[in-house]
Amino acid sequence: HPTASPNCNSNATSFDFIIIGGGTAGLALAARLSQGLVDNCILVIEAGQDGRDEPGIYIPGREGSTFGTKYDWNLTTVPQPNVNNRVISMTRGKVLGGSSALNLMTWDRASKAEYDMWEELGNPGWNWDSMYQTMLKVENFTSSPDYGKAGVGHGGPIQTLINRILPRHQLAFPPAMEQLGLRENLESLDRYPIGVLRSPSNIRASNYTRSYSPTYLELAKSNLILTIGTRVARINFNGETATGVTLQDGTSITASKEVILSAGTLQSPGLLELSGIGDDNFLKAAGVNKTIYNLPGVGENLQDHIRTQNSYQLKPGYTSVDILRYNATYAAQQLTLYNSNDPSLYDYTGSGYAFMNWSQVSNATASSLIPLAYKAANFSSPIDQKKLTYLNSSLATQVPQLEVIFSDGYTGVKGYPTNGSSLYGAEFFTIIAGVQHPFSRGSVHINSSSLLAPPVIDPKYLSNDYDLAALMIAAKYARLIASTAPLSDVWSSEYEPGPQISTGEQWQNYAKSSMLSIYHPVGTCAMLPEKAGGVVDSQLKVYGTKGLRVVDASVMPILVYNCGGNPCCIREPPLTL
Ligand SMILES: Cc1cc2nc3c(=O)[nH]c(=O)nc-3n(C[C@H](O)[C@H](O)[C@H](O)COP(=O)(O)OP(=O)(O)OC[C@H]3O[C@@H](n4cnc5c(N)ncnc54)[C@H](O)[C@@H]3O)c2cc1C
Image: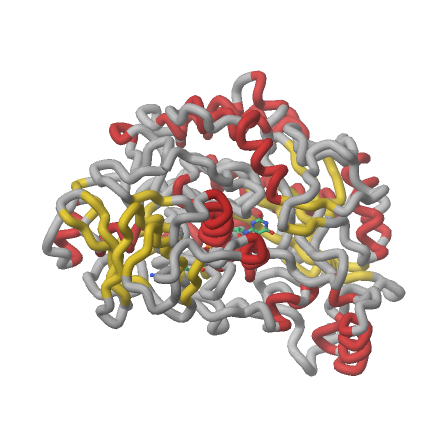
Protein backbone atom coordinates (compact mmCIF):
# COMPACT_ATOMS: atom_id res chain seq x y z
CA HIS A 1 0.00 0.00 0.00
CA PRO A 2 1.23 3.54 -0.60
CA THR A 3 2.31 5.32 2.56
CA ALA A 4 0.66 8.50 3.75
CA SER A 5 3.93 10.29 3.20
CA PRO A 6 7.52 9.16 2.72
CA ASN A 7 8.18 10.57 6.19
CA CYS A 8 5.74 8.09 7.76
CA ASN A 9 8.27 5.54 8.95
CA SER A 10 9.70 4.19 12.17
CA ASN A 11 12.43 6.86 12.29
CA ALA A 12 9.93 9.70 12.33
CA THR A 13 9.61 11.82 15.46
CA SER A 14 6.24 13.26 14.52
CA PHE A 15 2.99 11.44 13.71
CA ASP A 16 -0.65 12.39 13.27
CA PHE A 17 -1.87 9.93 15.93
CA ILE A 18 0.02 8.16 18.68
CA ILE A 19 -1.68 5.15 20.28
CA ILE A 20 -0.21 4.14 23.64
CA GLY A 21 -0.56 0.36 24.06
CA GLY A 22 -0.73 -2.21 21.25
CA GLY A 23 -3.20 -4.36 23.14
CA THR A 24 -6.75 -5.51 22.50
CA ALA A 25 -8.38 -2.17 21.82
CA GLY A 26 -5.21 -0.36 20.71
CA LEU A 27 -4.53 -2.58 17.70
CA ALA A 28 -8.17 -2.74 16.63
CA LEU A 29 -8.37 1.04 16.66
CA ALA A 30 -4.98 1.47 14.99
CA ALA A 31 -5.94 -0.76 12.07
CA ARG A 32 -9.29 0.95 11.55
CA LEU A 33 -7.68 4.41 11.69
CA SER A 34 -5.08 3.24 9.22
CA GLN A 35 -7.80 2.07 6.83
CA GLY A 36 -10.03 5.08 7.32
CA LEU A 37 -7.46 7.89 7.38
CA VAL A 38 -5.05 6.82 4.68
CA ASP A 39 -3.35 10.22 4.53
CA ASN A 40 -2.49 10.09 8.21
CA CYS A 41 0.50 8.55 9.90
CA ILE A 42 -0.33 6.45 12.96
CA LEU A 43 2.14 5.22 15.55
CA VAL A 44 1.38 2.41 18.02
CA ILE A 45 3.77 2.10 20.97
CA GLU A 46 3.64 -1.23 22.81
CA ALA A 47 5.70 -1.99 25.92
CA GLY A 48 5.78 -5.77 25.37
CA GLN A 49 7.35 -7.87 22.66
CA ASP A 50 5.74 -9.64 19.69
CA GLY A 51 4.50 -13.01 21.03
CA ARG A 52 2.90 -14.30 17.85
CA ASP A 53 5.45 -17.15 17.60
CA GLU A 54 5.12 -18.11 21.27
CA PRO A 55 3.40 -21.53 21.62
CA GLY A 56 2.13 -20.57 25.09
CA ILE A 57 0.15 -17.84 23.37
CA TYR A 58 -0.95 -19.37 20.08
CA ILE A 59 -1.78 -22.93 21.25
CA PRO A 60 -5.27 -22.76 22.78
CA GLY A 61 -4.72 -25.71 25.14
CA ARG A 62 -1.75 -23.91 26.68
CA GLU A 63 -3.92 -21.01 27.86
CA GLY A 64 -2.77 -19.92 31.28
CA SER A 65 0.84 -21.07 30.77
CA THR A 66 2.02 -17.49 30.17
CA PHE A 67 0.65 -16.16 33.47
CA GLY A 68 3.53 -15.00 35.64
CA THR A 69 5.99 -14.92 32.71
CA LYS A 70 7.59 -12.04 30.81
CA TYR A 71 4.32 -11.74 28.85
CA ASP A 72 2.45 -10.76 32.02
CA TRP A 73 2.77 -7.42 33.82
CA ASN A 74 2.54 -9.51 37.01
CA LEU A 75 0.43 -6.95 38.81
CA THR A 76 -1.26 -7.72 42.12
CA THR A 77 -3.77 -6.04 44.36
CA VAL A 78 -2.85 -4.65 47.74
CA PRO A 79 -3.79 -7.10 50.53
CA GLN A 80 -7.57 -7.46 50.53
CA PRO A 81 -8.89 -7.45 54.11
CA ASN A 82 -12.19 -9.17 53.26
CA VAL A 83 -10.57 -12.17 51.58
CA ASN A 84 -8.26 -13.08 54.45
CA ASN A 85 -5.78 -10.36 53.56
CA ARG A 86 -4.77 -12.18 50.42
CA VAL A 87 -3.00 -10.42 47.55
CA ILE A 88 -4.87 -11.26 44.32
CA SER A 89 -3.13 -11.67 40.94
CA MET A 90 -4.24 -9.17 38.33
CA THR A 91 -2.92 -10.89 35.21
CA ARG A 92 -2.49 -8.46 32.27
CA GLY A 93 -0.76 -9.03 28.95
CA LYS A 94 2.58 -7.30 28.41
CA VAL A 95 2.93 -8.35 24.81
CA LEU A 96 1.64 -7.36 21.38
CA GLY A 97 -2.11 -7.96 21.65
CA GLY A 98 -2.10 -7.17 25.37
CA SER A 99 -4.53 -9.21 27.42
CA SER A 100 -6.08 -10.71 24.27
CA ALA A 101 -2.81 -12.70 24.04
CA LEU A 102 -3.32 -14.18 27.50
CA ASN A 103 -7.06 -14.41 27.85
CA LEU A 104 -9.06 -17.61 27.82
CA MET A 105 -10.55 -17.07 24.36
CA THR A 106 -14.21 -17.18 25.34
CA TRP A 107 -16.15 -15.23 22.76
CA ASP A 108 -19.25 -13.83 24.34
CA ARG A 109 -21.36 -10.74 24.69
CA ALA A 110 -23.43 -9.15 27.43
CA SER A 111 -27.19 -8.64 27.35
CA LYS A 112 -28.89 -5.87 25.41
CA ALA A 113 -29.96 -4.17 28.63
CA GLU A 114 -26.38 -3.88 29.88
CA TYR A 115 -25.21 -1.99 26.78
CA ASP A 116 -28.33 0.18 26.73
CA MET A 117 -27.41 1.15 30.28
CA TRP A 118 -24.23 2.85 29.02
CA GLU A 119 -26.40 5.29 27.08
CA GLU A 120 -28.68 5.81 30.06
CA LEU A 121 -25.62 6.69 32.11
CA GLY A 122 -25.12 9.76 29.90
CA ASN A 123 -23.39 8.46 26.77
CA PRO A 124 -25.51 9.18 23.68
CA GLY A 125 -25.09 6.58 20.96
CA TRP A 126 -23.65 3.85 23.18
CA ASN A 127 -26.48 1.33 23.14
CA TRP A 128 -27.12 -2.22 21.99
CA ASP A 129 -28.29 -1.27 18.50
CA SER A 130 -25.23 0.78 17.60
CA MET A 131 -22.65 -1.36 19.39
CA TYR A 132 -24.05 -4.66 18.14
CA GLN A 133 -23.57 -3.68 14.50
CA THR A 134 -19.93 -2.83 15.06
CA MET A 135 -19.31 -5.86 17.28
CA LEU A 136 -20.47 -8.11 14.45
CA LYS A 137 -17.83 -6.50 12.21
CA VAL A 138 -15.11 -7.76 14.54
CA GLU A 139 -15.65 -11.47 13.94
CA ASN A 140 -15.80 -14.21 11.38
CA PHE A 141 -17.71 -17.15 12.84
CA THR A 142 -17.37 -20.64 11.39
CA SER A 143 -20.93 -21.97 11.42
CA SER A 144 -21.57 -25.03 13.53
CA PRO A 145 -24.51 -27.36 14.19
CA ASP A 146 -23.74 -26.78 17.89
CA TYR A 147 -24.51 -23.07 17.70
CA GLY A 148 -27.29 -20.90 16.26
CA LYS A 149 -27.26 -18.39 13.44
CA ALA A 150 -28.20 -15.18 15.25
CA GLY A 151 -25.64 -13.09 17.09
CA VAL A 152 -22.59 -14.10 15.10
CA GLY A 153 -20.68 -12.00 12.57
CA HIS A 154 -18.99 -12.94 9.33
CA GLY A 155 -16.14 -11.36 7.42
CA GLY A 156 -14.34 -9.68 10.34
CA PRO A 157 -10.70 -10.22 11.29
CA ILE A 158 -11.14 -12.25 14.50
CA GLN A 159 -11.92 -15.89 13.72
CA THR A 160 -14.37 -17.63 16.02
CA LEU A 161 -15.67 -21.19 16.18
CA ILE A 162 -17.17 -23.90 18.34
CA ASN A 163 -14.20 -25.91 19.55
CA ARG A 164 -13.81 -29.34 17.96
CA ILE A 165 -12.47 -30.72 21.26
CA LEU A 166 -15.17 -31.42 23.81
CA PRO A 167 -14.36 -33.44 26.95
CA ARG A 168 -16.80 -36.40 27.12
CA HIS A 169 -17.79 -35.56 30.70
CA GLN A 170 -18.81 -32.02 29.61
CA LEU A 171 -21.72 -33.64 27.75
CA ALA A 172 -23.28 -34.14 31.18
CA PHE A 173 -23.19 -30.41 32.01
CA PRO A 174 -26.04 -29.04 29.82
CA PRO A 175 -28.58 -31.69 30.88
CA ALA A 176 -27.67 -31.11 34.53
CA MET A 177 -28.31 -27.39 34.09
CA GLU A 178 -31.58 -28.16 32.32
CA GLN A 179 -32.54 -30.35 35.28
CA LEU A 180 -31.98 -27.27 37.42
CA GLY A 181 -34.41 -25.30 35.26
CA LEU A 182 -32.18 -23.57 32.73
CA ARG A 183 -32.95 -23.77 29.02
CA GLU A 184 -30.46 -24.36 26.24
CA ASN A 185 -29.53 -21.10 24.50
CA LEU A 186 -27.64 -21.45 21.25
CA GLU A 187 -28.04 -17.79 20.36
CA SER A 188 -26.51 -16.40 23.52
CA LEU A 189 -24.65 -13.66 21.61
CA ASP A 190 -27.89 -12.13 20.43
CA ARG A 191 -29.23 -9.91 23.21
CA TYR A 192 -30.40 -12.48 25.74
CA PRO A 193 -27.52 -14.60 27.06
CA ILE A 194 -29.39 -16.45 29.81
CA GLY A 195 -29.25 -20.22 29.36
CA VAL A 196 -26.77 -23.07 29.01
CA LEU A 197 -24.60 -23.38 25.94
CA ARG A 198 -21.38 -24.27 24.24
CA SER A 199 -19.64 -20.95 23.86
CA PRO A 200 -17.66 -19.93 20.77
CA SER A 201 -13.91 -19.39 21.17
CA ASN A 202 -11.67 -17.02 19.25
CA ILE A 203 -9.61 -19.60 17.38
CA ARG A 204 -8.62 -19.79 13.72
CA ALA A 205 -10.37 -22.74 12.06
CA SER A 206 -7.55 -23.13 9.50
CA ASN A 207 -4.79 -24.03 11.98
CA TYR A 208 -6.37 -23.91 15.45
CA THR A 209 -4.30 -21.01 16.70
CA ARG A 210 -5.46 -18.13 18.93
CA SER A 211 -7.12 -15.41 16.85
CA TYR A 212 -6.54 -12.16 18.71
CA SER A 213 -5.95 -8.47 18.27
CA PRO A 214 -2.61 -8.59 16.35
CA THR A 215 -4.71 -10.09 13.53
CA TYR A 216 -5.97 -6.55 13.00
CA LEU A 217 -2.50 -5.58 11.78
CA GLU A 218 -3.23 -7.59 8.62
CA LEU A 219 -5.90 -4.99 7.75
CA ALA A 220 -3.58 -2.03 8.27
CA LYS A 221 -1.91 -0.06 5.54
CA SER A 222 1.68 1.07 5.62
CA ASN A 223 0.62 4.30 7.36
CA LEU A 224 0.55 2.30 10.59
CA ILE A 225 3.93 2.20 12.32
CA LEU A 226 4.35 -0.25 15.18
CA THR A 227 7.02 0.06 17.87
CA ILE A 228 7.34 -2.81 20.34
CA GLY A 229 9.38 -3.22 23.52
CA THR A 230 8.97 0.52 24.17
CA ARG A 231 7.26 1.98 27.18
CA VAL A 232 5.59 5.37 27.28
CA ALA A 233 6.49 7.32 30.42
CA ARG A 234 4.01 10.20 30.09
CA ILE A 235 1.85 12.28 27.79
CA ASN A 236 3.20 15.74 26.93
CA PHE A 237 1.06 18.85 26.96
CA ASN A 238 1.13 22.38 25.69
CA GLY A 239 -1.35 23.98 28.05
CA GLU A 240 -4.34 21.66 27.95
CA THR A 241 -3.49 20.16 24.54
CA ALA A 242 -1.77 16.78 24.29
CA THR A 243 1.19 17.19 21.95
CA GLY A 244 2.84 13.78 22.11
CA VAL A 245 4.56 11.40 24.48
CA THR A 246 7.83 10.93 26.29
CA LEU A 247 9.26 7.41 26.28
CA GLN A 248 10.94 5.68 29.21
CA ASP A 249 14.38 6.54 27.75
CA GLY A 250 13.46 10.24 27.57
CA THR A 251 12.78 10.42 23.81
CA SER A 252 9.92 12.73 22.85
CA ILE A 253 7.57 11.96 19.96
CA THR A 254 5.03 14.44 18.65
CA ALA A 255 1.40 13.82 17.72
CA SER A 256 -0.02 16.58 15.56
CA LYS A 257 -3.64 15.39 15.93
CA GLU A 258 -4.24 13.12 18.91
CA VAL A 259 -2.71 10.99 21.59
CA ILE A 260 -4.87 7.91 22.22
CA LEU A 261 -4.38 6.06 25.47
CA SER A 262 -4.98 2.30 25.41
CA ALA A 263 -2.78 0.91 28.17
CA GLY A 264 -5.62 -1.01 29.87
CA THR A 265 -7.80 -0.56 32.95
CA LEU A 266 -4.94 -0.92 35.40
CA GLN A 267 -2.36 1.23 33.61
CA SER A 268 -4.17 3.95 31.68
CA PRO A 269 -5.08 5.81 34.92
CA GLY A 270 -1.44 5.78 36.06
CA LEU A 271 -0.25 7.25 32.77
CA LEU A 272 -2.83 10.03 33.09
CA GLU A 273 -1.70 10.69 36.65
CA LEU A 274 1.99 10.69 35.76
CA SER A 275 1.10 13.25 33.07
CA GLY A 276 -0.67 15.57 35.51
CA ILE A 277 -4.31 14.52 35.04
CA GLY A 278 -6.10 13.17 38.07
CA ASP A 279 -7.11 14.02 41.58
CA ASP A 280 -4.83 16.86 42.63
CA ASN A 281 -4.35 15.31 46.06
CA PHE A 282 -3.14 11.99 44.65
CA LEU A 283 -0.84 13.76 42.22
CA LYS A 284 0.77 15.83 44.97
CA ALA A 285 1.15 12.83 47.28
CA ALA A 286 2.85 10.88 44.49
CA GLY A 287 5.24 13.75 43.75
CA VAL A 288 3.79 14.78 40.38
CA ASN A 289 4.57 18.46 40.37
CA LYS A 290 2.40 19.87 37.62
CA THR A 291 -1.36 19.36 37.44
CA ILE A 292 -2.73 19.76 33.93
CA TYR A 293 -6.31 19.12 35.04
CA ASN A 294 -7.80 18.17 38.39
CA LEU A 295 -9.96 15.16 37.45
CA PRO A 296 -10.90 13.15 40.55
CA GLY A 297 -12.50 10.28 38.58
CA VAL A 298 -9.13 9.05 37.25
CA GLY A 299 -8.39 5.61 38.71
CA GLU A 300 -11.68 5.39 40.64
CA ASN A 301 -14.74 3.21 39.89
CA LEU A 302 -12.64 0.01 39.53
CA GLN A 303 -15.04 -2.91 39.04
CA ASP A 304 -14.24 -6.57 38.52
CA HIS A 305 -15.96 -9.94 38.36
CA ILE A 306 -15.33 -12.30 41.25
CA ARG A 307 -15.43 -16.10 41.32
CA THR A 308 -15.01 -19.27 43.30
CA GLN A 309 -14.27 -22.73 41.97
CA ASN A 310 -15.18 -26.27 43.07
CA SER A 311 -13.22 -29.27 41.71
CA TYR A 312 -14.38 -32.88 41.30
CA GLN A 313 -12.31 -36.00 40.75
CA LEU A 314 -13.43 -37.84 37.63
CA LYS A 315 -14.28 -41.53 37.68
CA PRO A 316 -11.91 -43.88 35.82
CA GLY A 317 -12.49 -43.86 32.07
CA TYR A 318 -12.74 -40.07 31.72
CA THR A 319 -9.76 -38.07 30.42
CA SER A 320 -9.40 -34.40 31.26
CA VAL A 321 -6.73 -31.90 30.22
CA ASP A 322 -4.99 -32.74 33.54
CA ILE A 323 -3.35 -35.63 31.67
CA LEU A 324 -1.19 -33.08 29.86
CA ARG A 325 0.44 -32.07 33.16
CA TYR A 326 1.40 -35.51 34.48
CA ASN A 327 1.82 -37.75 31.41
CA ALA A 328 4.70 -36.38 29.32
CA THR A 329 4.44 -39.12 26.69
CA TYR A 330 0.75 -38.45 26.10
CA ALA A 331 1.38 -34.69 26.05
CA ALA A 332 4.12 -35.12 23.41
CA GLN A 333 1.78 -37.23 21.24
CA GLN A 334 -0.93 -34.61 21.51
CA LEU A 335 1.53 -31.86 20.60
CA THR A 336 2.58 -33.80 17.49
CA LEU A 337 -1.06 -34.09 16.49
CA TYR A 338 -1.54 -30.37 17.15
CA ASN A 339 1.49 -29.44 15.07
CA SER A 340 0.11 -31.58 12.21
CA ASN A 341 -3.18 -29.69 12.48
CA ASP A 342 -5.04 -32.84 13.57
CA PRO A 343 -7.55 -32.73 16.42
CA SER A 344 -5.62 -32.71 19.68
CA LEU A 345 -6.23 -32.04 23.35
CA TYR A 346 -4.12 -28.91 22.80
CA ASP A 347 -7.04 -27.47 20.82
CA TYR A 348 -9.02 -27.26 24.06
CA THR A 349 -10.64 -24.08 25.32
CA GLY A 350 -13.40 -23.87 27.91
CA SER A 351 -16.78 -23.93 26.21
CA GLY A 352 -19.32 -25.10 28.80
CA TYR A 353 -21.16 -22.01 30.03
CA ALA A 354 -24.38 -21.16 31.82
CA PHE A 355 -25.74 -17.71 32.61
CA MET A 356 -28.62 -17.10 34.96
CA ASN A 357 -30.30 -14.68 37.30
CA TRP A 358 -30.73 -15.22 41.02
CA SER A 359 -34.34 -16.43 40.76
CA GLN A 360 -33.08 -19.25 38.60
CA VAL A 361 -30.85 -20.32 41.46
CA SER A 362 -33.97 -20.15 43.64
CA ASN A 363 -36.67 -17.63 44.51
CA ALA A 364 -35.38 -17.66 48.09
CA THR A 365 -31.91 -16.69 46.81
CA ALA A 366 -33.27 -13.68 44.95
CA SER A 367 -35.35 -12.63 47.96
CA SER A 368 -32.42 -12.90 50.33
CA LEU A 369 -29.95 -11.04 48.10
CA ILE A 370 -32.07 -8.05 47.09
CA PRO A 371 -32.19 -6.47 50.59
CA LEU A 372 -28.42 -6.95 50.86
CA ALA A 373 -28.00 -5.20 47.50
CA TYR A 374 -30.01 -2.23 48.79
CA LYS A 375 -27.76 -2.13 51.84
CA ALA A 376 -24.62 -2.32 49.70
CA ALA A 377 -25.64 0.31 47.16
CA ASN A 378 -24.45 3.88 47.33
CA PHE A 379 -27.60 5.69 46.28
CA SER A 380 -25.72 8.74 45.07
CA SER A 381 -23.88 6.59 42.52
CA PRO A 382 -25.60 6.16 39.13
CA ILE A 383 -23.63 2.92 38.68
CA ASP A 384 -25.03 1.37 41.84
CA GLN A 385 -28.53 2.55 40.93
CA LYS A 386 -28.27 0.71 37.61
CA LYS A 387 -27.04 -2.43 39.35
CA LEU A 388 -30.13 -2.31 41.56
CA THR A 389 -32.28 -1.99 38.44
CA TYR A 390 -30.76 -5.21 37.11
CA LEU A 391 -31.91 -6.96 40.27
CA ASN A 392 -35.25 -5.40 40.89
CA SER A 393 -37.12 -4.56 37.68
CA SER A 394 -38.29 -6.26 34.53
CA LEU A 395 -34.59 -6.48 33.59
CA ALA A 396 -34.04 -9.06 36.33
CA THR A 397 -35.08 -11.80 33.92
CA GLN A 398 -32.71 -10.59 31.18
CA VAL A 399 -29.48 -9.66 32.90
CA PRO A 400 -27.36 -12.56 34.17
CA GLN A 401 -26.17 -12.34 37.77
CA LEU A 402 -24.32 -15.63 37.88
CA GLU A 403 -21.93 -17.17 35.37
CA VAL A 404 -21.11 -20.87 35.60
CA ILE A 405 -18.12 -22.19 33.69
CA PHE A 406 -17.50 -25.87 33.15
CA SER A 407 -13.71 -25.87 33.24
CA ASP A 408 -12.01 -29.08 32.24
CA GLY A 409 -9.15 -30.16 34.47
CA TYR A 410 -8.17 -28.77 37.85
CA THR A 411 -8.39 -24.96 38.03
CA GLY A 412 -8.83 -24.36 41.76
CA VAL A 413 -6.92 -22.57 44.52
CA LYS A 414 -5.67 -25.50 46.62
CA GLY A 415 -3.38 -26.74 43.83
CA TYR A 416 -3.20 -29.88 41.72
CA PRO A 417 -2.03 -32.85 43.88
CA THR A 418 1.74 -32.80 44.21
CA ASN A 419 3.94 -35.38 42.54
CA GLY A 420 4.25 -38.32 44.96
CA SER A 421 0.91 -37.73 46.68
CA SER A 422 -1.82 -40.37 46.34
CA LEU A 423 -3.96 -38.21 44.07
CA TYR A 424 -1.14 -37.32 41.67
CA GLY A 425 -2.34 -38.47 38.24
CA ALA A 426 -6.01 -38.01 39.14
CA GLU A 427 -8.18 -36.07 36.72
CA PHE A 428 -10.67 -33.39 37.58
CA PHE A 429 -13.20 -30.95 36.26
CA THR A 430 -13.89 -27.62 37.93
CA ILE A 431 -17.11 -25.63 38.21
CA ILE A 432 -16.23 -21.94 38.29
CA ALA A 433 -19.03 -19.69 39.54
CA GLY A 434 -18.71 -15.94 38.97
CA VAL A 435 -20.75 -13.07 40.40
CA GLN A 436 -21.47 -10.69 37.53
CA HIS A 437 -22.58 -7.44 39.17
CA PRO A 438 -20.83 -7.07 42.51
CA PHE A 439 -21.23 -3.74 44.31
CA SER A 440 -17.62 -3.41 45.48
CA ARG A 441 -15.87 -0.64 43.61
CA GLY A 442 -12.25 0.18 44.21
CA SER A 443 -9.43 2.17 42.69
CA VAL A 444 -6.03 2.10 41.02
CA HIS A 445 -3.56 4.94 41.52
CA ILE A 446 0.11 5.75 41.44
CA ASN A 447 1.88 6.40 44.72
CA SER A 448 5.15 7.51 43.19
CA SER A 449 6.20 9.67 40.27
CA SER A 450 8.40 6.80 39.06
CA LEU A 451 7.08 4.99 35.98
CA LEU A 452 8.51 1.75 37.35
CA ALA A 453 6.56 1.76 40.61
CA PRO A 454 3.66 -0.72 40.28
CA PRO A 455 0.15 0.72 40.48
CA VAL A 456 -1.65 0.51 43.82
CA ILE A 457 -4.63 -1.68 42.94
CA ASP A 458 -7.41 -1.91 45.49
CA PRO A 459 -10.61 -3.48 44.11
CA LYS A 460 -12.08 -3.68 47.66
CA TYR A 461 -13.19 -7.24 47.00
CA LEU A 462 -16.13 -8.46 49.12
CA SER A 463 -16.36 -5.12 50.90
CA ASN A 464 -20.13 -5.45 51.33
CA ASP A 465 -22.52 -8.16 52.49
CA TYR A 466 -24.16 -8.56 49.08
CA ASP A 467 -20.92 -9.55 47.33
CA LEU A 468 -19.98 -11.98 50.09
CA ALA A 469 -23.43 -13.61 50.24
CA ALA A 470 -23.63 -13.81 46.43
CA LEU A 471 -20.23 -15.48 46.20
CA MET A 472 -21.10 -17.92 48.96
CA ILE A 473 -24.34 -18.83 47.17
CA ALA A 474 -22.37 -19.24 43.94
CA ALA A 475 -19.99 -21.73 45.58
CA LYS A 476 -22.83 -23.72 47.13
CA TYR A 477 -24.71 -23.74 43.85
CA ALA A 478 -21.62 -25.10 42.07
CA ARG A 479 -21.85 -28.14 44.35
CA LEU A 480 -25.54 -28.51 43.55
CA ILE A 481 -24.74 -28.46 39.82
CA ALA A 482 -22.06 -31.12 40.22
CA SER A 483 -24.48 -33.22 42.30
CA THR A 484 -27.24 -33.09 39.69
CA ALA A 485 -27.67 -35.97 37.24
CA PRO A 486 -26.23 -36.75 34.81
CA LEU A 487 -23.19 -34.70 35.89
CA SER A 488 -23.24 -36.44 39.27
CA ASP A 489 -22.48 -39.72 37.45
CA VAL A 490 -19.04 -38.71 36.15
CA TRP A 491 -17.18 -37.94 39.41
CA SER A 492 -16.27 -39.85 42.53
CA SER A 493 -15.34 -37.17 45.10
CA GLU A 494 -15.28 -33.45 45.66
CA TYR A 495 -11.62 -32.46 45.86
CA GLU A 496 -12.19 -28.79 46.61
CA PRO A 497 -13.63 -27.48 48.87
CA GLY A 498 -14.43 -31.04 50.05
CA PRO A 499 -17.47 -32.56 51.80
CA GLN A 500 -16.39 -31.25 55.22
CA ILE A 501 -17.63 -27.81 54.12
CA SER A 502 -21.35 -27.80 54.78
CA THR A 503 -22.52 -25.10 57.21
CA GLY A 504 -23.30 -21.55 56.20
CA GLU A 505 -20.29 -20.28 58.11
CA GLN A 506 -17.99 -22.79 56.41
CA TRP A 507 -19.25 -21.77 52.96
CA GLN A 508 -18.71 -18.14 53.87
CA ASN A 509 -15.14 -18.86 54.91
CA TYR A 510 -14.61 -20.85 51.72
CA ALA A 511 -15.86 -17.94 49.62
CA LYS A 512 -13.34 -15.67 51.36
CA SER A 513 -10.42 -18.06 51.07
CA SER A 514 -11.06 -19.11 47.46
CA MET A 515 -12.23 -15.88 45.82
CA LEU A 516 -10.26 -14.91 42.73
CA SER A 517 -10.62 -12.28 40.04
CA ILE A 518 -11.96 -13.45 36.72
CA TYR A 519 -9.67 -10.91 35.01
CA HIS A 520 -12.25 -8.36 33.89
CA PRO A 521 -11.30 -5.06 35.56
CA VAL A 522 -13.05 -2.06 34.00
CA GLY A 523 -14.21 1.45 34.79
CA THR A 524 -11.12 3.39 35.91
CA CYS A 525 -11.34 6.04 33.15
CA ALA A 526 -15.10 5.87 33.05
CA MET A 527 -17.15 7.26 30.20
CA LEU A 528 -19.57 9.22 32.35
CA PRO A 529 -20.52 12.86 32.85
CA GLU A 530 -17.65 14.56 34.64
CA LYS A 531 -19.76 15.42 37.68
CA ALA A 532 -20.66 11.72 38.03
CA GLY A 533 -16.97 10.81 38.29
CA GLY A 534 -16.33 10.48 34.56
CA VAL A 535 -12.90 10.73 32.95
CA VAL A 536 -13.91 10.68 29.27
CA ASP A 537 -16.98 11.97 27.45
CA SER A 538 -19.03 9.91 25.01
CA GLN A 539 -16.45 10.61 22.29
CA LEU A 540 -13.85 9.13 24.66
CA LYS A 541 -12.16 12.54 25.01
CA VAL A 542 -10.51 13.19 28.36
CA TYR A 543 -12.24 16.01 30.24
CA GLY A 544 -10.24 19.21 30.61
CA THR A 545 -7.90 18.37 27.74
CA LYS A 546 -7.70 18.58 23.97
CA GLY A 547 -6.28 15.97 21.62
CA LEU A 548 -6.42 13.12 24.14
CA ARG A 549 -8.71 10.08 24.31
CA VAL A 550 -8.84 6.80 26.18
CA VAL A 551 -10.18 3.78 24.27
CA ASP A 552 -9.51 0.64 26.32
CA ALA A 553 -11.66 -1.32 28.78
CA SER A 554 -11.12 1.37 31.43
CA VAL A 555 -13.78 3.52 29.74
CA MET A 556 -16.57 0.99 30.35
CA PRO A 557 -18.60 2.83 32.98
CA ILE A 558 -20.30 -0.25 34.41
CA LEU A 559 -19.24 -3.85 34.37
CA VAL A 560 -21.08 -5.99 31.83
CA TYR A 561 -21.62 -9.68 32.47
CA ASN A 562 -18.62 -11.90 31.74
CA CYS A 563 -17.16 -10.03 28.81
CA GLY A 564 -14.33 -8.02 30.23
CA GLY A 565 -13.27 -5.92 27.31
CA ASN A 566 -12.49 -8.32 24.56
CA PRO A 567 -12.97 -6.66 21.15
CA CYS A 568 -16.40 -8.26 21.19
CA CYS A 569 -17.28 -5.57 23.70
CA ILE A 570 -15.25 -2.66 22.47
CA ARG A 571 -16.84 -0.54 19.82
CA GLU A 572 -14.79 0.09 16.73
CA PRO A 573 -14.58 3.59 15.24
CA PRO A 574 -15.90 5.72 13.67
CA LEU A 575 -15.92 8.27 16.41
CA THR A 576 -15.74 11.89 15.37
CA LEU A 577 -12.09 12.72 14.79
C1 LIG B 1 -6.18 -14.13 32.01
C2 LIG B 1 -7.31 -13.40 31.33
C3 LIG B 1 -8.40 -14.12 30.86
C4 LIG B 1 -9.44 -13.45 30.23
N1 LIG B 1 -10.40 -14.18 29.59
C5 LIG B 1 -11.30 -13.56 28.79
C6 LIG B 1 -12.14 -14.29 27.94
O1 LIG B 1 -12.06 -15.52 27.87
N2 LIG B 1 -13.05 -13.60 27.19
C7 LIG B 1 -13.13 -12.22 27.21
O2 LIG B 1 -13.98 -11.63 26.54
N3 LIG B 1 -12.28 -11.50 27.99
C8 LIG B 1 -11.36 -12.15 28.74
N4 LIG B 1 -10.46 -11.41 29.46
C9 LIG B 1 -10.59 -9.95 29.47
C10 LIG B 1 -10.04 -9.28 28.20
O3 LIG B 1 -8.98 -10.01 27.66
C11 LIG B 1 -9.57 -7.88 28.58
O4 LIG B 1 -10.62 -7.19 29.19
C12 LIG B 1 -9.13 -7.07 27.35
O5 LIG B 1 -8.14 -7.78 26.65
C13 LIG B 1 -8.63 -5.71 27.78
O6 LIG B 1 -8.24 -4.98 26.64
P1 LIG B 1 -7.56 -3.56 26.77
O7 LIG B 1 -7.34 -3.07 25.39
O8 LIG B 1 -8.35 -2.74 27.71
O9 LIG B 1 -6.17 -3.82 27.51
P2 LIG B 1 -4.94 -4.74 27.09
O10 LIG B 1 -5.34 -5.70 26.03
O11 LIG B 1 -4.38 -5.31 28.33
O12 LIG B 1 -3.93 -3.73 26.42
C14 LIG B 1 -3.11 -2.83 27.11
C15 LIG B 1 -1.78 -2.76 26.39
O13 LIG B 1 -1.06 -1.62 26.79
C16 LIG B 1 0.30 -1.96 26.94
N5 LIG B 1 0.90 -0.97 27.84
C17 LIG B 1 0.62 -0.75 29.15
N6 LIG B 1 1.34 0.28 29.63
C18 LIG B 1 2.08 0.73 28.59
C19 LIG B 1 3.02 1.79 28.45
N7 LIG B 1 3.33 2.61 29.48
N8 LIG B 1 3.61 1.97 27.24
C20 LIG B 1 3.31 1.18 26.19
N9 LIG B 1 2.43 0.16 26.27
C21 LIG B 1 1.81 -0.05 27.46
C22 LIG B 1 0.24 -3.38 27.50
O14 LIG B 1 1.46 -4.06 27.37
C23 LIG B 1 -0.89 -3.97 26.69
O15 LIG B 1 -0.44 -4.53 25.48
C24 LIG B 1 -9.42 -12.05 30.12
C25 LIG B 1 -8.31 -11.33 30.61
C26 LIG B 1 -7.26 -11.99 31.19
C27 LIG B 1 -6.07 -11.21 31.67
